Image 1 (cartoon, rainbow, N blue to C red):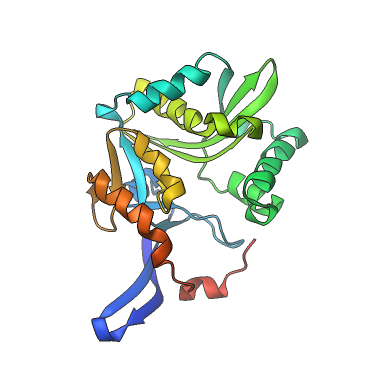
Image 2 (cartoon, one colour):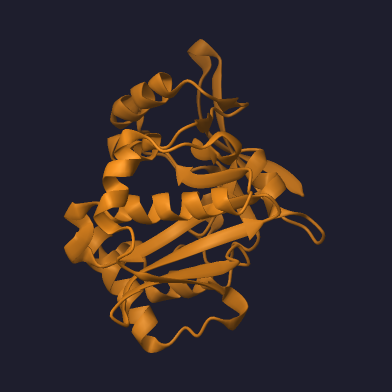
Length: 249
């Protein structure tokens, strides 16, 4: 695994020098080891292959996982309603209906520029997905989850679901369902992605939760929530130097 940094900004008066951190997977590397070091798969640039970035991410410590009152409330809404199937990516049949479902979700939920088809296909073939989890109701797709599983770790990377169920917290239930399955399967860590901004704090509904602070996995959830609530005041309109040479989707 090769690590490199890319300069972002500086404030010489306070001796503050910012660098974005990346990891490049090489033959024989295990992606789960990169996750353990605080890295997540990068999918923003067309030419980026086997690349990960360091960020404030969260993971559930599955060996001590237990349901919270909020978990139980969400579980009651959807448990037993859908037919679920975990399919290895290598044998998953990605037909046009699948593409339409997923791309329409992103278009209507986050804006069409967020997930153009070219980026979606790039993610599918990134090598960072091991399984696609499907949820169906009366034979019709309700949701898809892109998951990475390796060794004792798994990552809930992307989800796409029926937008009419957004206000009923289907998205949170999907994450809970995957966490419960990973726990039942004896895995140790379940990665939930980044935690930036107030909208991402729903991930703190899982216990016990750890989050990456740039150096170690923290357990102080109060501090994580404080940072999430204050993230909007610490955004810098800058791009690190490596990305300036990249072609984006």
